[in-house]
Image 1 (cartoon, rainbow, N blue to C red):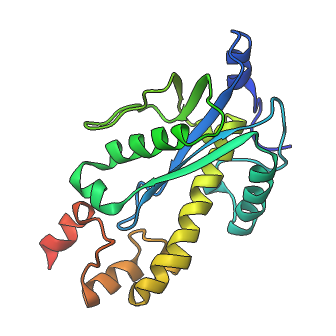
Image 2 (cartoon, rainbow, N blue to C red):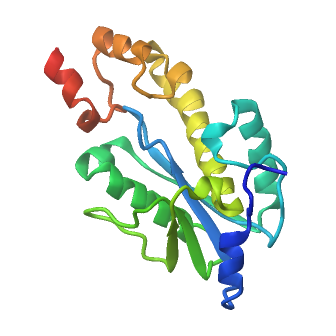
Length: 210
């Protein structure tokens, strides 16, 4: 089994109220200095238990990749969406996260009756979750479907950063740090300056020190 004590408790509470289709929703990439923020929405077959499923941040990369394949094969429906760095700068990261999550919900081939949203936020200044939903603090470690969404979002973003952005801008070595504010990333910023994929709203302190 996995580390979640009651992995279907949140879904079951909705099923008991007559809600039939529940999706879990989570995002990845809110913290990096570059690239898009990703979100995923997943509808799992009721009471499907996926061995080792947990918050994506607590899993090694190889395990996440294996779980990704299992989730997309076994899910009733899944969807991944993203909001680009330029839009994050034009709005704010909270709004971008909310927009990405709503886009993921909208992209599901099955319309869910209710969404379980990881975290305690459901709106930013310019975007909000408009689907019927419940926010679940720490949901990626408490709900099977949110955990599944966290893995799809994390793996999808990592693949894009590694397979696309790292090849487009090899000087920054994005594949090594995935855009987070590591010593290596800041060293490359000092050497080359920002590229079009950098979130300039995240680099104000770095710019002030130049």
